[in-house]
Amino acid sequence: MNNDLPAVHLKNAWRSSHPWIFQKLVAKPEQKPKPGTIVEVIGVDGEWIGRGFYNGHSRIAVRILETDPDVPVDAGWFSRKIAEAVSLRRDVLKLDDVSNAWRVVHAEGDGLSGLVVDRYDDLLVVEFFSAGMFRHREWIYEALKEQFPGARFYSFAEEHVQKQESFDFRGTEPPAPAIITENGVRFRADPAGAHKTGFFADQRENREWLSHQAAGKRVLDLCCNTGGFGVYAKVRGAEEVVGVDIDEDVISIAKGNAKLNDVKLKFVQADIFPWLRDAGNAKDLYDVVILDPAKMTRDREQVIAALKKYLDMNKLALGVVKPGGLFATFSCTGLVSEQEFLDMLRRAAYFSGRTLQILKVSGAGADHPFMAHVQESRYLKAVFCRVF
Image (cartoon, rainbow, N blue to C red; front, side, top):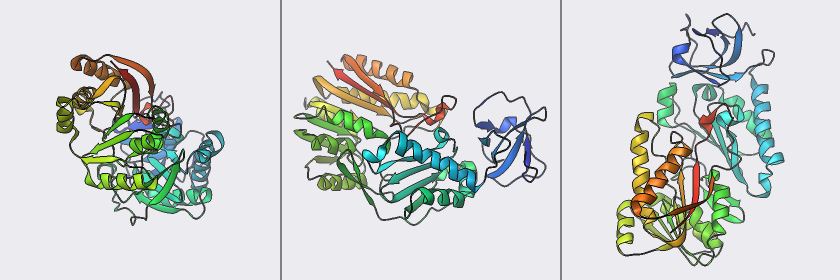
């Protein structure tokens, strides 16, 4: 135990290995540490639990970082943890052989609760989810510079996170986009553009697998964002690709990504609900249909409403898949479990009068790991099926 650090005490016995300790279990300290202060955590019987970030303003009052009493949480600690995370990607997963874009740090999945870092060639995008990570950001930057000499940085925190965690951060100046290559396909990653980190690296393996089913096929990419799935499909020999998204900015980036790869796609700016109804009524059918919508909710009270919206869009999407065609559907809503998503898909098939043969269920790439005792880091559900 480090007597130089402030201590917080728990009100009840703590038997969990989960890094989060919620507000109701933590006694309010007489002298309140500032949000994100590193503290010693003491159990109800006086035993040392661990050390980590304290935030009296957050629902997650304590984020445990270290459970070895002899290991301080300091600049060296961050240097070692980030080096371990990078080694997983480079030495174990060998992602540099596949792409120059991958997730460097995946929060709890890498033992760094409240921090996400993505790499896009020479650009590192740092997202803060906790006051503690924001408060100690200079240690994080230094550790990242050790692994990526000469890298550019773009940092931000979403408004709802800043409100929940009680810190203010306007973000850094928007950087120039980075050009990345993934399985031989090129994209422009633009954090200052439509998507907060510039590109969805989590879908890398899913894009690659699906693209090899697209040769000679007619492909529909719904909620296409910056064109990831659609561009992959066209590069791999799809006969025709149509991408649909409601956001004009991402459509513009998607068109640029098509040009980067010298392929031609048709992009439509539209709400997918009326667009799919019109396509279904016109019997405009596709061999491969991809549905990859944005996160539906962060609120546990809204999960049922989110599942209903998933049901409605999946029913409509199934209506434009040719018999025997391939349907790939995704959910990045972490609060929706894989079982709930599969059950929604079963109901969507029933109500649309289609039969689904599920070929594959997967999730995010291996650079988005999650700990068995911290399932919160798992979020992406990917289901690939044939439709009859």
